[in-house]
Length: 483
Image 1 (cartoon, one colour):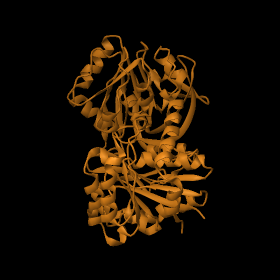
Image 2: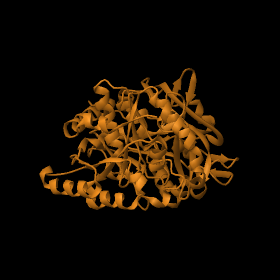
Image 3: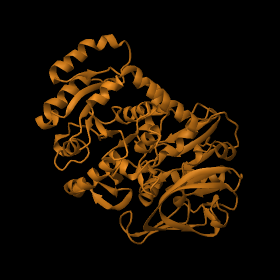
Image 4: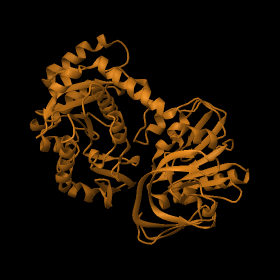
């Protein structure tokens, strides 16, 4: 009989994702079959699964930590924000449609049967299911029809550990306050609290832990010391672009405009790990640096809208000047579409039907459509002959004269386009820079950095960190059997 334990937070970014990932590896190292699970996620950073769908990038990382293939069951409901008050809804890895926030909140309870079915599907092939909540567990205004936090925990009767972040301050009030505002029936599911990201002498928090235990009536675990190498792990929230260092001050500068709906930005992580590179994320209101050696236009969840924003910020002028200076530009997925002549959306996939003029740097045109391409790819980069791996996650077909000079070839199919002068390149493939040999050849650099190896080392270090500060046997004892 599988057991399950859920980790909820007093707020967003308290470390739930990292804790679950580390525990996935720690318990897998003990010989357990572990499965990560997040009922509902909201992120434009997604990954393609082994069963041909998409899930949040964090659950793909957790699956990797558990030494398992990512599956759509690990994140049955995914929301991908398209604008301030609406998102694309993905259920069991497949796009269902786009919904205004108000409409989704009204109907989300109808998704609970599919959420529970996915959870039990994972449990049937696991010894331990580690569940991650979403956002804050104390958002009582969102409790009705909830499928992400206590709504799911009640339906599945999963014991909960409440995680608080001491690094941001106010952790005692955050934990005790959560117990004070949520319903008594939800409080009854909480088996312990956990203080995360502690810096300094843990003895200084002894009285704080005792106070939390006294006020909540459940043990206070930790404090769990801050783990700096968590920054080396792929992130799912674009706020990580603020927190992560931009390269290591290398002489080769790559500029990346921060589009309002930037997607799959973990494409940049291997570049940030290179000591010879500086990755400059250009914020709205800032000019793209003239000193940049390369501009990368990243993926976007709303390509036409982000193209409009790009022009509003004046980045189109900077990009065209960069090209006139004889420098390179790479467009990935939505960024590739922006580099072309036109982007047509006859069916209103991204909003109002219509056609937008692209930047005109590639002689290609894009027509958006309802079919989303989702698959892992193994390809050859034609300009260097290097092998690379990546994944397709896009809607639309791009074609034109510059497609005769493709970026890569896979199983007889071509991908992407290259301008006649060779300076402008577009591809639909995400994740390409994780391929070390390709990355070094494409950027004409030599480096000892092994990106995937560094991620594995960080996961192993995180698992060891958690095992040394938490009683893993006690956590298993707190878990409940899957009904």
